[in-house]
Length: 366
Ligand code: F6R
Image (cartoon, rainbow, N blue to C red; front, side, top):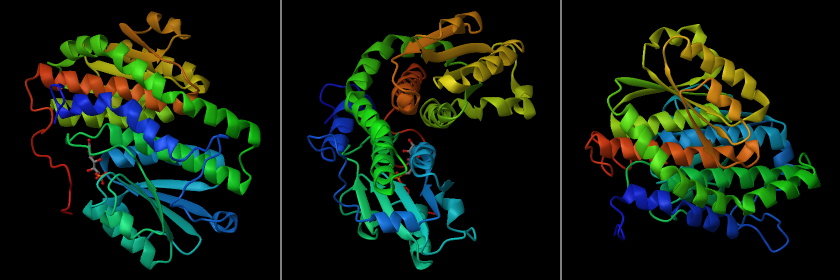
């Protein structure tokens, strides 16, 4: 049941702190050590991999992009994220030295399952991140990391995504430690950061309600809209625009902020809403210069950043400040706001929030 919430989606957005807690807590012992029950990879096996593929569809793929970034950093090997409907038909260079990580909330998505089988046949080791215990993906994997999000009823994925991110963060810590590529000090710092992320998500939900409604009113009539970001913010932008599209039916695209000038900026007109995520400190200035260039072409610029970047107010029409954690974990915070923007825009347009048109929860067709 919706337990008093207007929609399953809103209930599931509110369940995220708990879902994240559940996904974390069963894997962290009292000394802050990560242990992953269903993952049987040894130090030798991890050292033997020369690349990792992450394969998934839609929102799960977007989680995989973040996973790529954090795993690459922790393991110092090449990680490639691909959409399952492409991966399965490509001549990928896969063998026994490849780890393939499959991400699927339902564990039944046709293209994802086919990719798993394809990679397995070529000798790859398969690790899956899934939310449904005993699902096809779970049954056919060598290693398994369940997200403990609980049942996700709304078609648009929310808590499955945030718990998939947690799974990737944990994998990066676990593998990095086993392999010795992550030093003990950073390991500890990451664990401490993760342990308080649920509270930060909780605060973000309550702090974002009113501003998300306000943004929804501002963008609901827009024929088209852009989400921009660099690095992890770009991956969050992809997820933010997918969520907005599927719920509001507004044409929304995400772009790597620096790529815009290579063509897409031609689409910016007077009043085009451009929402830029600028939470990654090391590339903050670069992102700001991209905002300036869309603003100069008439965009209605909305910036999402952390409190220390007050100078955003000089370049944007509107700035939304969100909770601060280290850059690595900002995707868990910023995505919450974008989920709420999509949710309230859907309501503002009178759409069916939990069952958007043309979509099904589980995509078992190819
Ligand atoms: C979007 C959404 C979809 C799914 C995709 C994969 O909100 O929910 O993009 O993420 O269909 O589904 P799973 O994770 O079940 O394989």
